[in-house]
Image 1 (cartoon, rainbow, N blue to C red):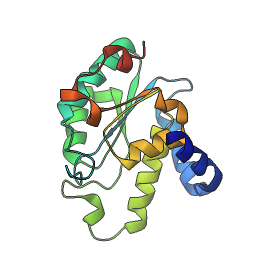
Image 2: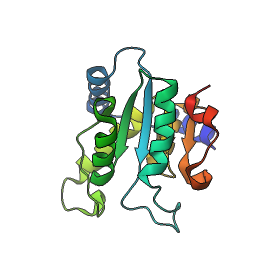
Image 3: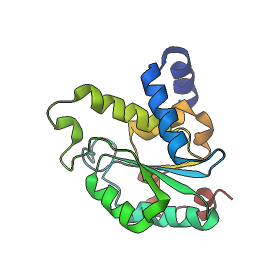
Image 4: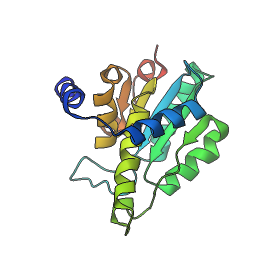
Length: 178
């Protein structure tokens, strides 16, 4: 299905020039050419158990992020999240290793907040396109992470979906990239 979705995106989806410029400018400002980047999408506010599963706790991500950083000490982390709390927790733990865009966030659900409707959609698209450039993608069940893979099909073999990992446990060689 990912191959089919990737083909459809390549054929029919063309992000507007201002979106492509925003993605390029952010990437160039934060990552050196050839940098190792762990892309992390943490969905935290509008996730419902009956539609894609429970919210994956930050601690489950951290275990995998720590493993990746052990295997790739020079790596940086690109975090995309709707949750201000998740962003604070990740900044406190990873400091200068963590890169995150300024975006609309809300513990309630950014899409339920009034106004700036187009900005919300653009933020999500820019996040998905940035995540698609990562060396490895850590995510939960969400369209944002899936679209990152659709935009870069090689992430199919270089990603881990924590929604489908029992208790946050996964094969260490998957996340370390070995």
